[in-house]
Length: 458
Ligand SMILES: [Zn+2]
Ligand SMILES: [Zn+2]
Image (cartoon, rainbow, N blue to C red; front, side, top):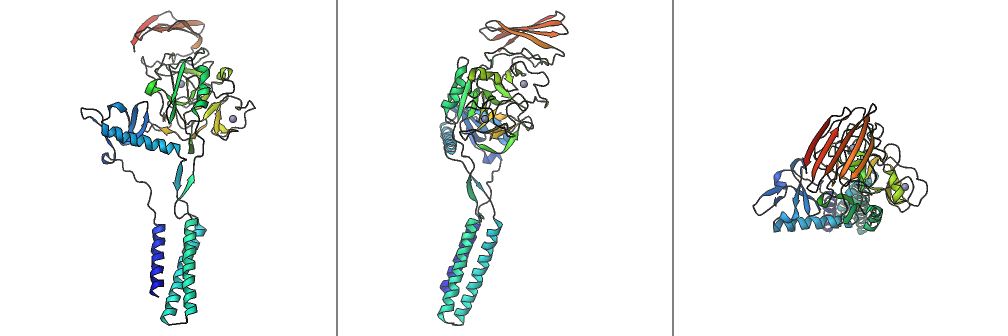
Protein backbone atom coordinates (compact mmCIF):
# COMPACT_ATOMS: atom_id res chain seq x y z
CA UNK A 1 0.00 0.00 0.00
CA UNK A 2 2.78 2.39 1.02
CA UNK A 3 4.52 1.69 -2.30
CA UNK A 4 1.40 2.72 -4.26
CA UNK A 5 0.92 5.83 -2.16
CA UNK A 6 4.57 6.89 -2.41
CA UNK A 7 4.68 6.26 -6.19
CA UNK A 8 1.40 8.16 -6.67
CA UNK A 9 2.66 11.18 -4.74
CA UNK A 10 6.00 11.06 -6.60
CA UNK A 11 4.18 11.07 -10.00
CA UNK A 12 1.99 13.94 -8.89
CA UNK A 13 5.01 16.00 -7.81
CA UNK A 14 6.71 15.17 -11.12
CA UNK A 15 3.66 16.42 -13.05
CA UNK A 16 3.54 19.64 -11.08
CA UNK A 17 7.23 20.09 -11.83
CA UNK A 18 6.64 19.47 -15.57
CA UNK A 19 3.79 21.95 -15.69
CA UNK A 20 5.56 24.65 -13.74
CA UNK A 21 7.64 26.37 -16.39
CA UNK A 22 9.64 29.48 -15.87
CA UNK A 23 7.97 32.70 -17.01
CA UNK A 24 9.13 35.10 -19.73
CA UNK A 25 12.59 36.57 -19.94
CA UNK A 26 12.81 39.48 -17.56
CA UNK A 27 15.14 42.31 -18.34
CA UNK A 28 15.24 45.27 -16.08
CA UNK A 29 16.70 48.32 -17.71
CA UNK A 30 18.44 50.02 -14.86
CA UNK A 31 22.10 50.93 -14.73
CA UNK A 32 22.97 47.87 -12.66
CA UNK A 33 21.72 45.49 -15.33
CA UNK A 34 23.71 47.20 -18.10
CA UNK A 35 27.31 46.40 -18.85
CA UNK A 36 29.91 49.01 -17.85
CA UNK A 37 32.60 49.24 -20.55
CA UNK A 38 36.08 50.56 -19.84
CA UNK A 39 36.63 52.59 -22.94
CA UNK A 40 40.25 53.68 -22.66
CA UNK A 41 43.27 53.82 -20.40
CA UNK A 42 41.93 56.98 -18.72
CA UNK A 43 39.21 54.88 -17.13
CA UNK A 44 36.31 56.45 -19.05
CA UNK A 45 33.22 54.29 -19.06
CA UNK A 46 30.33 53.65 -21.40
CA UNK A 47 27.21 51.97 -20.05
CA UNK A 48 24.99 49.74 -22.15
CA UNK A 49 24.32 46.28 -23.44
CA UNK A 50 26.13 44.87 -26.45
CA UNK A 51 24.05 45.24 -29.63
CA UNK A 52 26.31 44.49 -32.57
CA UNK A 53 29.80 44.65 -33.99
CA UNK A 54 30.50 46.34 -37.28
CA UNK A 55 33.73 47.46 -38.93
CA UNK A 56 35.79 47.49 -35.76
CA UNK A 57 33.13 49.32 -33.77
CA UNK A 58 30.86 47.88 -31.14
CA UNK A 59 27.36 49.31 -30.78
CA UNK A 60 25.82 49.34 -27.32
CA UNK A 61 22.29 50.13 -26.23
CA UNK A 62 22.06 52.19 -23.06
CA UNK A 63 19.20 53.53 -20.99
CA UNK A 64 16.08 54.61 -22.93
CA UNK A 65 17.38 52.81 -26.00
CA UNK A 66 20.22 55.25 -26.71
CA UNK A 67 22.81 53.72 -29.00
CA UNK A 68 26.52 54.46 -28.74
CA UNK A 69 29.38 53.40 -30.93
CA UNK A 70 32.77 52.51 -29.42
CA UNK A 71 35.92 51.60 -31.36
CA UNK A 72 36.76 48.00 -30.51
CA UNK A 73 40.45 48.92 -30.27
CA UNK A 74 39.74 51.37 -27.42
CA UNK A 75 38.31 48.65 -25.15
CA UNK A 76 40.32 47.37 -22.22
CA UNK A 77 41.37 43.70 -22.50
CA UNK A 78 38.61 42.41 -20.19
CA UNK A 79 35.96 44.14 -22.25
CA UNK A 80 37.50 42.90 -25.49
CA UNK A 81 37.01 39.35 -24.18
CA UNK A 82 33.47 40.23 -23.13
CA UNK A 83 32.76 41.72 -26.59
CA UNK A 84 34.33 38.69 -28.34
CA UNK A 85 31.97 36.43 -26.40
CA UNK A 86 28.95 38.49 -27.42
CA UNK A 87 30.09 38.55 -31.07
CA UNK A 88 30.58 34.76 -31.02
CA UNK A 89 27.13 34.28 -29.52
CA UNK A 90 25.56 36.32 -32.32
CA UNK A 91 27.55 34.49 -35.01
CA UNK A 92 26.51 31.15 -33.56
CA UNK A 93 22.92 32.32 -33.33
CA UNK A 94 23.01 33.44 -36.96
CA UNK A 95 24.54 30.21 -38.22
CA UNK A 96 22.08 27.95 -36.41
CA UNK A 97 18.52 27.60 -37.54
CA UNK A 98 16.71 30.08 -35.35
CA UNK A 99 14.26 28.40 -33.06
CA UNK A 100 11.64 30.36 -31.27
CA UNK A 101 9.97 29.29 -28.08
CA UNK A 102 6.32 29.91 -27.79
CA UNK A 103 3.58 28.96 -25.41
CA UNK A 104 0.58 27.29 -26.94
CA UNK A 105 -2.24 25.65 -25.06
CA UNK A 106 -4.34 22.94 -26.67
CA UNK A 107 -7.46 23.03 -24.54
CA UNK A 108 -8.93 19.60 -25.45
CA UNK A 109 -5.72 17.88 -24.45
CA UNK A 110 -5.50 20.02 -21.34
CA UNK A 111 -8.96 18.69 -20.34
CA UNK A 112 -7.76 15.07 -20.92
CA UNK A 113 -4.76 15.87 -18.73
CA UNK A 114 -6.91 17.16 -15.87
CA UNK A 115 -9.47 14.30 -16.16
CA UNK A 116 -6.67 11.73 -16.19
CA UNK A 117 -5.14 13.21 -13.04
CA UNK A 118 -8.54 13.15 -11.30
CA UNK A 119 -9.19 9.55 -12.51
CA UNK A 120 -5.79 8.36 -11.36
CA UNK A 121 -6.41 9.75 -7.86
CA UNK A 122 -9.90 8.23 -7.86
CA UNK A 123 -8.45 4.81 -8.69
CA UNK A 124 -5.64 5.35 -6.20
CA UNK A 125 -8.20 6.04 -3.46
CA UNK A 126 -10.23 2.92 -4.32
CA UNK A 127 -7.03 0.86 -4.41
CA UNK A 128 -6.03 2.14 -0.99
CA UNK A 129 -9.51 1.45 0.40
CA UNK A 130 -9.49 -2.14 -0.96
CA UNK A 131 -6.07 -2.60 0.56
CA UNK A 132 -7.34 -1.40 3.94
CA UNK A 133 -10.32 -3.72 3.74
CA UNK A 134 -7.92 -6.54 2.94
CA UNK A 135 -9.84 -7.42 -0.24
CA UNK A 136 -8.51 -10.12 -2.54
CA UNK A 137 -5.30 -9.41 -4.46
CA UNK A 138 -6.82 -9.16 -7.98
CA UNK A 139 -8.98 -5.99 -7.49
CA UNK A 140 -6.15 -4.33 -5.51
CA UNK A 141 -3.66 -4.97 -8.33
CA UNK A 142 -6.23 -3.91 -10.97
CA UNK A 143 -6.90 -0.56 -9.35
CA UNK A 144 -3.19 0.08 -8.86
CA UNK A 145 -2.63 -0.60 -12.58
CA UNK A 146 -5.52 1.73 -13.51
CA UNK A 147 -3.93 4.44 -11.35
CA UNK A 148 -0.64 4.13 -13.25
CA UNK A 149 -2.45 3.92 -16.61
CA UNK A 150 -4.28 7.22 -16.05
CA UNK A 151 -1.17 8.90 -14.66
CA UNK A 152 0.58 7.79 -17.86
CA UNK A 153 -2.24 9.17 -20.05
CA UNK A 154 -2.09 12.47 -18.18
CA UNK A 155 1.67 12.79 -18.81
CA UNK A 156 1.22 12.09 -22.57
CA UNK A 157 -1.69 14.57 -22.72
CA UNK A 158 0.42 17.18 -20.98
CA UNK A 159 3.29 16.77 -23.43
CA UNK A 160 1.03 16.78 -26.50
CA UNK A 161 -1.04 19.69 -25.28
CA UNK A 162 1.98 22.01 -25.32
CA UNK A 163 1.13 23.07 -21.81
CA UNK A 164 4.88 22.84 -21.84
CA UNK A 165 6.26 25.46 -24.22
CA UNK A 166 7.32 24.02 -27.55
CA UNK A 167 9.93 25.06 -30.06
CA UNK A 168 8.85 25.80 -33.61
CA UNK A 169 11.23 26.68 -36.45
CA UNK A 170 10.53 30.27 -37.50
CA UNK A 171 13.23 30.78 -40.08
CA UNK A 172 14.30 28.29 -42.69
CA UNK A 173 15.59 30.90 -45.14
CA UNK A 174 18.93 29.84 -46.62
CA UNK A 175 21.79 32.19 -45.89
CA UNK A 176 22.39 34.47 -48.89
CA UNK A 177 25.72 33.74 -50.52
CA UNK A 178 28.13 36.65 -50.80
CA UNK A 179 28.87 35.48 -54.37
CA UNK A 180 25.24 36.09 -55.30
CA UNK A 181 25.08 39.58 -53.75
CA UNK A 182 28.48 40.48 -55.13
CA UNK A 183 27.40 39.46 -58.64
CA UNK A 184 24.54 41.97 -58.44
CA UNK A 185 26.90 44.82 -57.44
CA UNK A 186 29.63 43.76 -59.90
CA UNK A 187 28.36 45.81 -62.92
CA UNK A 188 28.96 48.98 -60.84
CA UNK A 189 32.37 48.03 -59.41
CA UNK A 190 34.01 51.12 -60.93
CA UNK A 191 32.22 53.35 -58.38
CA UNK A 192 31.63 51.02 -55.42
CA UNK A 193 33.61 48.61 -53.24
CA UNK A 194 32.10 45.53 -51.67
CA UNK A 195 33.24 43.47 -48.68
CA UNK A 196 31.64 41.22 -46.09
CA UNK A 197 31.95 39.73 -42.65
CA UNK A 198 30.02 36.86 -41.11
CA UNK A 199 26.85 38.92 -40.62
CA UNK A 200 26.71 41.61 -43.29
CA UNK A 201 27.59 42.33 -46.90
CA UNK A 202 29.04 45.87 -47.01
CA UNK A 203 28.86 48.40 -49.81
CA UNK A 204 31.20 51.39 -49.78
CA UNK A 205 30.78 54.32 -52.17
CA UNK A 206 30.56 58.10 -52.37
CA UNK A 207 26.83 58.13 -53.05
CA UNK A 208 27.09 59.58 -56.57
CA UNK A 209 25.74 57.43 -59.40
CA UNK A 210 27.31 57.24 -62.84
CA UNK A 211 24.00 58.32 -64.45
CA UNK A 212 22.99 61.97 -64.63
CA UNK A 213 20.81 63.42 -61.88
CA UNK A 214 18.41 66.23 -60.93
CA UNK A 215 16.87 66.92 -64.37
CA UNK A 216 13.09 66.60 -64.26
CA UNK A 217 12.56 67.84 -60.69
CA UNK A 218 9.66 70.31 -60.52
CA UNK A 219 9.40 70.51 -56.74
CA UNK A 220 12.91 71.34 -55.54
CA UNK A 221 14.31 71.80 -52.05
CA UNK A 222 17.47 73.48 -53.51
CA UNK A 223 19.66 70.57 -52.37
CA UNK A 224 22.27 69.25 -54.81
CA UNK A 225 24.32 66.06 -54.94
CA UNK A 226 27.72 66.07 -53.26
CA UNK A 227 29.96 63.08 -52.41
CA UNK A 228 29.19 61.28 -49.15
CA UNK A 229 31.47 59.18 -47.04
CA UNK A 230 29.66 55.83 -47.13
CA UNK A 231 32.81 53.92 -46.29
CA UNK A 232 34.34 51.96 -43.41
CA UNK A 233 32.04 51.86 -40.41
CA UNK A 234 29.61 54.10 -42.35
CA UNK A 235 29.21 51.75 -45.32
CA UNK A 236 25.86 50.17 -46.25
CA UNK A 237 25.09 46.81 -44.61
CA UNK A 238 22.94 44.01 -46.02
CA UNK A 239 22.18 41.14 -43.62
CA UNK A 240 23.39 37.80 -45.00
CA UNK A 241 20.81 35.82 -43.04
CA UNK A 242 17.33 37.25 -43.56
CA UNK A 243 14.75 36.34 -40.92
CA UNK A 244 11.01 36.65 -41.55
CA UNK A 245 9.35 39.35 -39.47
CA UNK A 246 6.51 38.16 -37.25
CA UNK A 247 4.54 41.20 -38.45
CA UNK A 248 6.10 42.93 -41.48
CA UNK A 249 6.46 46.66 -40.77
CA UNK A 250 4.57 48.79 -43.29
CA UNK A 251 6.41 51.55 -45.13
CA UNK A 252 3.23 53.64 -44.86
CA UNK A 253 3.67 53.98 -41.12
CA UNK A 254 7.40 53.37 -40.67
CA UNK A 255 10.84 54.23 -42.02
CA UNK A 256 10.20 57.86 -42.99
CA UNK A 257 13.85 58.38 -42.10
CA UNK A 258 16.84 56.71 -43.70
CA UNK A 259 17.06 54.09 -46.41
CA UNK A 260 14.94 50.94 -46.75
CA UNK A 261 17.16 49.41 -49.45
CA UNK A 262 20.45 49.94 -51.24
CA UNK A 263 20.51 49.94 -55.03
CA UNK A 264 23.22 47.88 -56.72
CA UNK A 265 24.93 51.09 -57.91
CA UNK A 266 25.42 52.15 -54.27
CA UNK A 267 22.57 54.67 -54.12
CA UNK A 268 20.24 54.32 -51.12
CA UNK A 269 16.51 53.86 -51.70
CA UNK A 270 14.27 55.71 -49.27
CA UNK A 271 10.60 55.26 -48.45
CA UNK A 272 8.32 56.18 -51.38
CA UNK A 273 6.70 58.71 -49.05
CA UNK A 274 8.63 61.77 -47.94
CA UNK A 275 8.72 62.74 -44.27
CA UNK A 276 5.38 64.56 -44.67
CA UNK A 277 3.80 61.32 -45.89
CA UNK A 278 3.50 62.50 -49.53
CA UNK A 279 4.42 60.35 -52.53
CA UNK A 280 7.71 62.00 -53.57
CA UNK A 281 7.34 60.91 -57.17
CA UNK A 282 3.77 62.16 -57.63
CA UNK A 283 4.52 65.62 -56.23
CA UNK A 284 7.44 66.21 -58.60
CA UNK A 285 10.25 65.88 -56.08
CA UNK A 286 12.13 63.29 -58.11
CA UNK A 287 14.36 63.51 -61.15
CA UNK A 288 14.13 61.37 -64.29
CA UNK A 289 16.00 58.56 -62.46
CA UNK A 290 13.69 58.48 -59.40
CA UNK A 291 16.06 60.35 -57.12
CA UNK A 292 16.79 63.69 -55.48
CA UNK A 293 18.90 65.06 -52.64
CA UNK A 294 18.18 65.22 -48.93
CA UNK A 295 19.15 67.80 -46.33
CA UNK A 296 22.72 66.50 -46.35
CA UNK A 297 22.91 67.09 -50.13
CA UNK A 298 22.82 63.29 -50.28
CA UNK A 299 21.47 61.79 -53.48
CA UNK A 300 18.95 58.96 -52.99
CA UNK A 301 16.04 57.31 -54.77
CA UNK A 302 12.43 57.28 -53.56
CA UNK A 303 11.12 55.40 -56.61
CA UNK A 304 12.35 52.07 -57.98
CA UNK A 305 15.54 52.54 -60.04
CA UNK A 306 14.19 50.31 -62.81
CA UNK A 307 16.63 51.97 -65.24
CA UNK A 308 19.39 49.91 -63.59
CA UNK A 309 17.98 46.83 -65.36
CA UNK A 310 19.50 48.33 -68.51
CA UNK A 311 22.92 47.49 -67.04
CA UNK A 312 22.00 44.75 -64.57
CA UNK A 313 19.81 42.68 -66.89
CA UNK A 314 17.94 40.10 -64.83
CA UNK A 315 20.13 40.51 -61.73
CA UNK A 316 18.66 42.26 -58.66
CA UNK A 317 18.54 46.07 -58.90
CA UNK A 318 18.74 46.50 -55.12
CA UNK A 319 18.81 44.73 -51.77
CA UNK A 320 16.40 45.66 -49.02
CA UNK A 321 17.94 46.30 -45.61
CA UNK A 322 16.19 43.15 -44.34
CA UNK A 323 18.49 41.14 -46.65
CA UNK A 324 16.03 40.22 -49.42
CA UNK A 325 16.83 41.02 -53.07
CA UNK A 326 14.81 43.51 -55.13
CA UNK A 327 14.35 42.58 -58.79
CA UNK A 328 13.22 44.78 -61.66
CA UNK A 329 10.04 44.28 -63.62
CA UNK A 330 10.87 40.67 -64.59
CA UNK A 331 11.41 37.46 -62.65
CA UNK A 332 15.04 36.32 -62.29
CA UNK A 333 14.50 33.79 -65.12
CA UNK A 334 13.20 36.48 -67.49
CA UNK A 335 9.53 35.57 -67.24
CA UNK A 336 6.76 38.09 -66.56
CA UNK A 337 6.61 39.26 -62.97
CA UNK A 338 4.30 37.10 -60.84
CA UNK A 339 1.65 38.65 -58.56
CA UNK A 340 3.04 40.64 -55.66
CA UNK A 341 1.88 40.38 -52.05
CA UNK A 342 1.28 43.33 -49.72
CA UNK A 343 5.02 43.53 -48.94
CA UNK A 344 5.59 44.03 -52.71
CA UNK A 345 7.25 40.68 -53.33
CA UNK A 346 6.81 36.93 -53.27
CA UNK A 347 8.70 33.66 -52.84
CA UNK A 348 10.81 33.04 -55.94
CA UNK A 349 11.33 29.80 -57.83
CA UNK A 350 14.38 29.16 -55.63
CA UNK A 351 12.15 29.20 -52.52
CA UNK A 352 13.57 32.52 -51.31
CA UNK A 353 11.52 35.68 -50.89
CA UNK A 354 12.28 38.70 -53.09
CA UNK A 355 10.77 42.11 -53.83
CA UNK A 356 10.14 43.76 -57.19
CA UNK A 357 10.49 47.37 -58.27
CA UNK A 358 7.43 48.79 -60.08
CA UNK A 359 6.31 52.13 -61.52
CA UNK A 360 3.46 52.59 -59.04
CA UNK A 361 3.24 53.01 -55.27
CA UNK A 362 4.82 51.51 -53.17
CA UNK A 363 7.43 51.20 -55.97
CA UNK A 364 9.88 49.03 -54.00
CA UNK A 365 8.73 47.84 -50.56
CA UNK A 366 5.20 47.80 -49.15
CA UNK A 367 6.17 46.22 -45.84
CA UNK A 368 9.46 44.80 -44.63
CA UNK A 369 9.04 41.06 -45.08
CA UNK A 370 12.19 40.48 -43.08
CA UNK A 371 12.98 41.42 -39.54
CA UNK A 372 14.86 44.71 -39.15
CA UNK A 373 16.23 46.56 -36.16
CA UNK A 374 14.95 50.08 -35.82
CA UNK A 375 16.57 53.03 -34.14
CA UNK A 376 14.86 53.16 -30.73
CA UNK A 377 15.57 56.89 -30.41
CA UNK A 378 13.23 57.88 -33.25
CA UNK A 379 9.62 56.65 -32.92
CA UNK A 380 7.46 55.61 -35.91
CA UNK A 381 6.82 56.85 -38.54
CA UNK A 382 10.22 58.61 -38.30
CA UNK A 383 11.94 55.40 -37.26
CA UNK A 384 14.87 54.18 -39.28
CA UNK A 385 16.50 50.85 -39.87
CA UNK A 386 19.83 50.12 -38.21
CA UNK A 387 22.54 49.55 -39.19
CA UNK A 388 22.47 52.20 -41.87
CA UNK A 389 24.96 54.59 -43.44
CA UNK A 390 24.56 58.28 -42.71
CA UNK A 391 25.04 61.37 -44.84
CA UNK A 392 26.89 64.28 -43.31
CA UNK A 393 25.60 67.75 -44.13
CA UNK A 394 28.05 70.30 -45.50
CA UNK A 395 25.89 73.43 -45.43
CA UNK A 396 22.69 74.56 -43.69
CA UNK A 397 19.54 72.91 -45.11
CA UNK A 398 17.88 74.91 -47.87
CA UNK A 399 14.18 75.65 -48.40
CA UNK A 400 11.87 74.78 -51.32
CA UNK A 401 12.15 77.06 -54.35
CA UNK A 402 8.59 77.59 -55.56
CA UNK A 403 7.79 76.88 -59.22
CA UNK A 404 11.38 76.00 -60.10
CA UNK A 405 11.99 73.13 -62.46
CA UNK A 406 15.46 71.75 -63.08
CA UNK A 407 16.27 71.77 -66.76
CA UNK A 408 19.94 70.81 -66.82
CA UNK A 409 22.62 69.33 -64.64
CA UNK A 410 26.15 68.66 -65.78
CA UNK A 411 29.65 67.88 -64.62
CA UNK A 412 31.49 70.72 -66.32
CA UNK A 413 34.94 69.57 -65.14
CA UNK A 414 36.10 67.12 -62.45
CA UNK A 415 34.48 67.98 -59.06
CA UNK A 416 32.57 70.86 -60.65
CA UNK A 417 28.81 70.77 -61.31
CA UNK A 418 26.41 73.24 -62.88
CA UNK A 419 22.68 73.00 -62.22
CA UNK A 420 20.25 75.06 -64.29
CA UNK A 421 16.67 75.74 -63.23
CA UNK A 422 13.84 77.73 -64.67
CA UNK A 423 11.08 79.81 -63.04
CA UNK A 424 8.59 81.36 -65.48
CA UNK A 425 11.01 81.31 -68.44
CA UNK A 426 13.87 82.86 -66.44
CA UNK A 427 16.91 80.78 -65.63
CA UNK A 428 18.81 80.44 -62.39
CA UNK A 429 22.03 78.52 -61.66
CA UNK A 430 23.80 76.66 -58.89
CA UNK A 431 27.45 76.17 -59.69
CA UNK A 432 29.47 74.25 -57.14
CA UNK A 433 32.85 72.60 -56.90
CA UNK A 434 35.33 71.30 -54.37
CA UNK A 435 39.09 71.21 -54.24
CA UNK A 436 41.66 68.69 -52.98
CA UNK A 437 41.40 70.00 -49.42
CA UNK A 438 37.61 69.52 -49.50
CA UNK A 439 36.72 73.19 -49.58
CA UNK A 440 33.36 73.50 -51.33
CA UNK A 441 32.41 76.66 -53.21
CA UNK A 442 28.77 77.37 -54.12
CA UNK A 443 27.93 80.17 -56.56
CA UNK A 444 24.18 80.79 -56.57
CA UNK A 445 22.72 82.92 -59.37
CA UNK A 446 18.99 83.54 -58.99
CA UNK A 447 16.55 84.33 -61.82
CA UNK A 448 17.03 88.10 -61.23
CA UNK A 449 20.78 87.69 -61.82
CA UNK A 450 21.82 88.20 -58.19
CA UNK A 451 24.96 86.20 -57.33
CA UNK A 452 25.85 84.82 -53.88
CA UNK A 453 29.07 82.89 -53.24
CA UNK A 454 29.50 80.63 -50.19
CA UNK A 455 32.44 78.52 -49.08
CA UNK A 456 32.08 75.48 -46.88
CA UNK A 457 35.03 73.50 -45.61
CA UNK A 458 34.50 69.81 -45.03
ZN1 LIG B 1 14.37 62.21 -50.22
ZN1 LIG C 1 9.56 37.69 -58.47
